[in-house]
Image 1: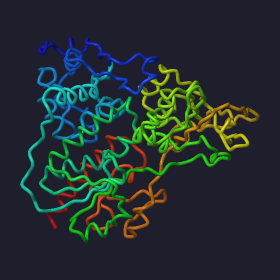
Image 2 (image 1 turned 120 degrees about the vertical axis):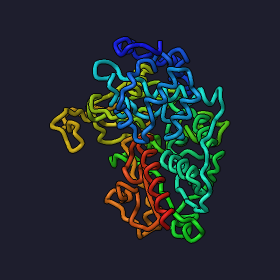
Image 3 (image 1 turned 90 degrees about the vertical axis):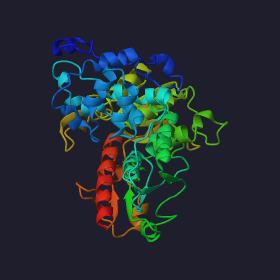
Length: 472
């Protein structure tokens, strides 16, 4: 089979991802996608044309050697494939699950010109899972210790990626995390049914085995400032605190009981296991047999509404002011949501929340919209339809319209330069900030983006930090 001609490979259809039934999975928090079998993985790998110049790599922010690892999968050398991926990506089990490959590496795939692109993300996930389940985690070699120390602020994807590269370069690395659990948005923001927490913990454990030191409950800016870290022996600092400050709609009634930011709602459920209350201490609004509306159209909105459905909501709505064509969430997440019974209320904009005499949410007033000309984002701008107001009865609302930058770092490090949104300004090539020895990357620089883009920034910063440490 490995000697198939190009024409024969092109005839092989893209292999389907086994998954839980939509109705069944809407009642549990188990992973939706079940992963490729060996047979499916080999067949999918055989679809790769082994291009002399694999342009798919150009679409990967961390530049995984895609052609090489897929060749190893086709040959049945799954552990070798895992090692090949880890030359550039220390978190393959995570990226294989949550990265938007369809907009990145798979979008560049030559096979996709005349058919469906190679399922690169699904193969990456298969390889990572196989290594964990059959071969154990195999870590790369560490270079001779340099005696240099780097502090990384934040244990999300950008911080973890940077830590993985720097520790392999021989530097001592300490990661400071504000919360009591490691993983940042991977652990508090993405639900179990998309990214099991054990996967995140296993990936972090591999970094611990390499020698990365992790410190939890460390809110840099309060427990220590960046200046204090550098005075205490750190030769460089990488800021990877993400964008965890929620945006709100700023409409009447947003302070009613039953209105959450997506950050609070998902953190309570994912990190603090509110869905197991009272076995766990943190409660969440009891939505069983009630109506829930999530406002927004991104992946976080999909996570929140699908979570509410699993918590027992009678009706779970997505309220979005544009059409589904403009919706920024991954197509797979939208498809899964619809399969699970999520109702989409499109071209509708919230005007105000309505409550009862006790201050509890009872409904939301919506205004119908129609699409006009494209705005600065390239999406058609929603325009109000006059006298189209109507009331939607809801018991809980979740606001999922994006996040801003936490101001703690900004307030305690005046030498850093920020833009008007509170994002740190950096040199695009080196991720260096305006303060000597301090670098930054991920959502704190770009605003809310994807896991893999944050990881790409972490890798770019690691290279620049290494160069800086050698010169200083």
